[in-house]
Image (cartoon, rainbow, N blue to C red; front, side, top):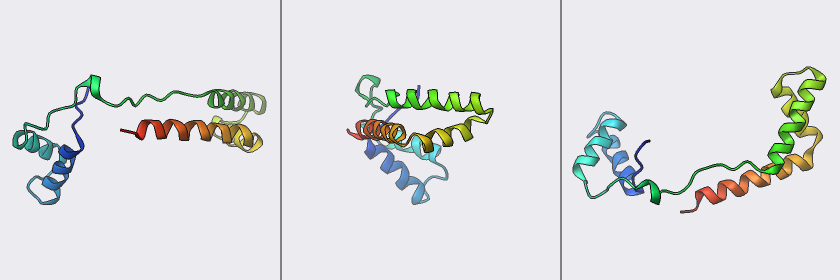
Length: 108
């Protein structure tokens, strides 16, 4: 699992790269770790959750897509477009679910 640091840590990494003190981002990460040991990695238990829960609208939309693909013998991508276009209410519900999920993940 990768380490996650507070926002201040990443601002310093960007400053190190932008100022030319470091040639690459990985080099800057190491330099900031050495320069600011007080900016420790955030423990896993304190990290914000980033799991994505798939909603009911998405499951229903995927069922329609699979049905279209099978019935019409068309590729998944084409079936996806046709399913969205023919089921605008279902697609709108799918977008609402994903927008709500994204807002939840963005909150500190």
